[in-house]
Image (tube, rainbow, N blue to C red; front, top):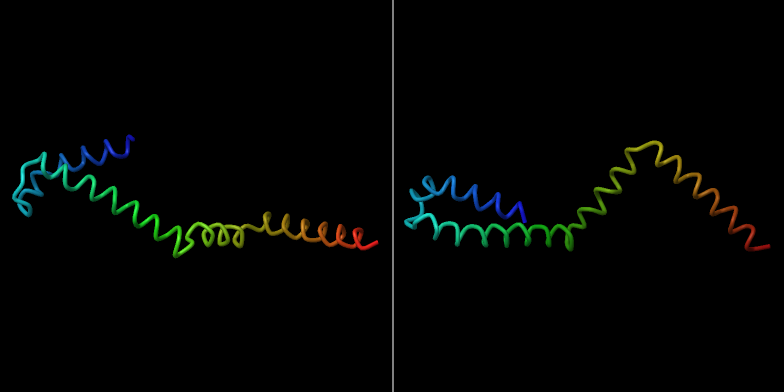
Length: 89
């Protein structure tokens, strides 16, 4: 919610400069740019989530760069192997 208010205030602050490019008053500029900006940010996030799988790759990269997590994952793999051996008996 505060992000939207902050964006509205930002658009109001630069509305004088936007009037050079857009022949509208400040209220019209806010009513046009704020919903457009919110929709654009949502659409980019949607693309990153569905097509690019950004968060999964980011998490994988973090795990690959963190030696303690790699050590813990190796311990978990060894425990799982031991459990599988016990299940076979």
